[in-house]
Amino acid sequence: MVDYYRRQGIKAWSNGEVPFRISSNPYIANAYAEIITGYLRDVSNVDDSVRSVTIIELGAGSGQFGYLLARALVERTIANAAYKGPSFKYLMTDVADSNVSEWAKNPRLRFLVEQGIMEFAVLDVADPYSAMIAVSRRSLEQFNSGNPVVVIANYVLDVLVHDAFSVRDGKLNEVRIGVEIGKKMPEIIGSKEVFESLAFNRTATPVKFPYYNEPDLDSVLKSYSTTLRSATFLFPVSALRFMEKVGQMSGGRMLMIVSDKAYIRTDQLEGQNGLNLAVTGSFSAIINLDAVARWIGEHGGVVKVPDSASSHFDTYAFLLRHTGDFVNLSDAFSRAVDDLGPASYWAVAENVMHHTGGFTLRALLGFLKLSCYDPYLVMAMKESLLQAANEADVEGGERLYSALSKVWGNYYPMGGNRARRDVAFLLGRLFRRLRKPERSLECFRASMEEFGAHCSVLRNIGICYEELGEKEEALSYYREASRLRPDLPAEEGITRLSQVDEIVASR
Image (cartoon, rainbow, N blue to C red; front, side):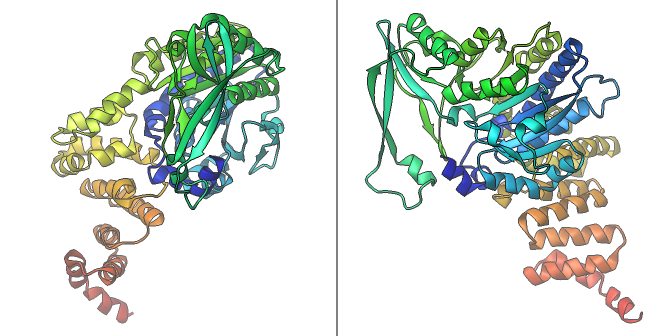
């Protein structure tokens, strides 16, 4: 699996092989920011000597969620004059060094690094102490300096190492998994085809304690023999070991936020007879967060669970070993997850994005606001937005411009299919229709940087320069557009501005 992510890099997400939109959009980023800000305030109330908290995002992948969350946190803390809590340092990590290398090139992330807000590291969950911070060249322990830690784990715990067990008639068995590859062996190890060709078999062996020779893990595992009657379940051994190590590194002060497909209650495990493995670009499982909750409970921690938690996808928070009341965290979790949580929002958003025609300007503005200004929602509503930009009056146009400017702030370039992902080009068109040529130019240039030059973007840049009165620049872009592909609007622009050649020649 590691080979797959190292080989694919950012393409695993930009090409759509690994699903990520549900756990990587502005709405869920703002929900996390709400929860973390509540935690920061509580940390300050409990111990006013804490000056900084470290946020470690595991399996950050494309880097999009980290960018959105860091921005949302800056708005609530650094940029908020009323905020009085500790600062934060954001560490994006991934096991694939190719992903970390791509982050360093991304202009949106580069700005956060330059501001001293964000750093990157290649991190193996099995050995976090070996991580080396890419920019400052410090170890993870040196980077954290004993501060409280917030761990972000979106769609990542499920792809770590798990052990499998079953309970039958009060007896706990180890389930040993065998892997078979289909008759036709894929040419590339670590490719999508490898995972699609896998088949699993299993055998059961009675468990003898101590099993792990780690008292905390053995205690949680043993508890299943008395709380389950008949079930096969996965045990998140890597996740629990990581939590223990980070807990030691942070003086026992840790908050972990998880959004994933998960079982959080024992009754969800009862009666399960399969491993629930899903194959996408790699493979994943429904994470057993019930085991994490039991481990947190044995360490005197607190678990925050949605009112109606769904195993399909939901958001959970695990608070480790803190003393004092964490009222702000509890209130923030209720607002961010229970009122209209990320899972419920996405259920609404998916349906809206499949019925994108016929929206009024007021409806478009309302849903953009609800989404916390999601760039890919704009792609789904393209035709309605283009029509609204054409027809808006002065007040409506300014409101739409303000909303689209916030969308542009959330945009994170990651390449892929230009027809489906060129948000910058669409925003450029919208800003031009709203008579904002300077902002249009910014977007069109970003589109070229991400997807390369093509006739349409060059012609639109020419139009922007013409609207700004810079005729020589306009003419050069019209000519370049026409050179790439004969284009009537570009040819008309060349004819219209042909007098520029005479002006240049006479100088």
